[in-house]
Length: 138
Image 1 (cartoon, rainbow, N blue to C red):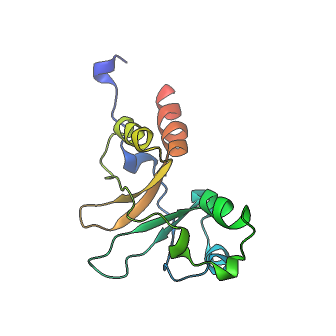
Image 2: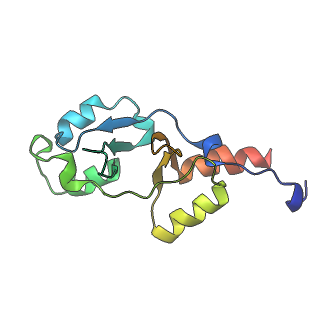
């Protein structure tokens, strides 16, 4: 297949559609206990209102700011260590551009937001490489 014939792999083709959403006031210990989709390594922090923005909390953030600093997870709220606002991507984006965006902003994963502003998934570098690039190598 030539470069001109190469099929476009979109974020929607590789993203994880199952993710966990929490409230920013939730404590870290409660948020971790409620996680059902550990493979995403991400907690999406819900908007408090229509005018608010989504946030994100990655497992490595918890490791760096709670575990490594010996803070009690029952005394730390999600909002204290989350990233907000978060960079989001469109499900129709080509994964090559998504990878460039991640590289430029030094992020490893992002919520995927549809045209209605709803989160429909989470995409990561791992998803793009293993589900996108590797599947394209056939």
